[in-house]
Amino acid sequence: KNNATATTTTTTIPSPLTAAAKTALKTALLTSSSNGDANPDSLQSCVHHGLPKSLVLRSIAAFHAKKREYAKALINMGKPADVSTLPAPMIQHLVDGIVAAVATAASTAAAAQAAQQKAA
Image (cartoon, rainbow, N blue to C red; front, side, top):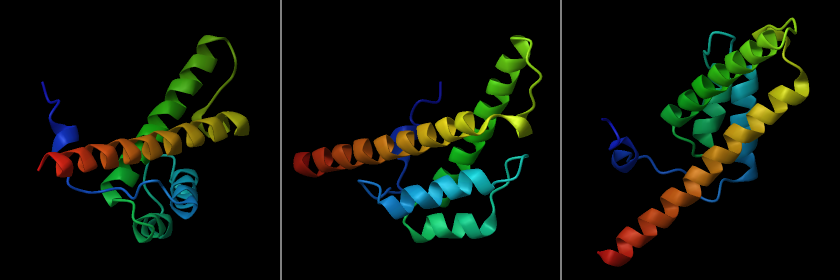
């Protein structure tokens, strides 16, 4: 029932995402603890590069949820797997996917905002 969340977000993400913002987000994902807590320095760096704190925390939560999904999938295939021992390419793929999703969201939001301003 709650599908109005996307439209009420007032935080703007810089679009297009700068390389520095992408790197900061990647670092935040990779340095977050296994229980999904953000590394304070990495979080600060993301905010410094214009990424909303809430967005970074959501990205970290998504990253850890995906890691658990991957580990479960590997276990289901009969491979010994653990969230902490996922292969590096898999982790890299996850991180890239999340950063790409954030970048896409940023450009979509910017386009929507531009359209709204034109209409006004």
